[in-house]
Length: 210
Image 1 (cartoon, rainbow, N blue to C red):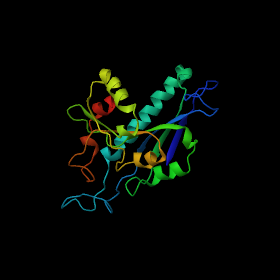
Image 2: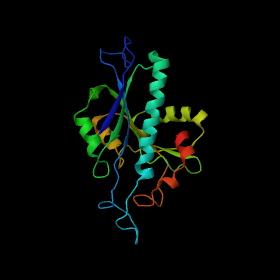
Image 3: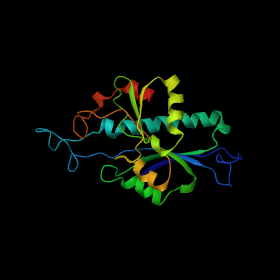
Image 4: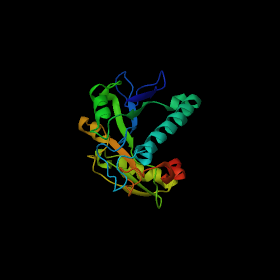
């Protein structure tokens, strides 16, 4: 795993109003993919043994995490008092072979796990089509649906909210630990798990909107 920490503001009461330890938000995406397709590939005839670049799955999520980290770090420099929670930016290893990196984190967390307020995941967010954004795992907290609908008014996505928090991605490492989760997803496509998941297929303007 590759982790970065944006610490909470100093001298402020914890966001949850209790105790001395601050709360944290974990924001993550997996950076591994399938190599030459040795395991898990959906390569078609003639594509066998080719490099699987994983542009959408999940270089798109990694790119979003890096941009979020940069923009929120700048925001904290300008308005530090707004950051009552710390933010852990996480790039997970081993998602494709069984959520290995994120599962390791929840068992050996670098911040107190009981102080993790929520986990936000970005997996395959590079193919925005017809402005449709899927928000997964909303059933893990009573606040997600209302919050998402409210925040989407200025964002303007064709928002699809799905409740099921048990998903084949890194949220499933966190939810069994009773941590609210939510995942951003722009949908599957015919290039999924194939060598054709390449950079020229990415909707970069759509990624910026996400």
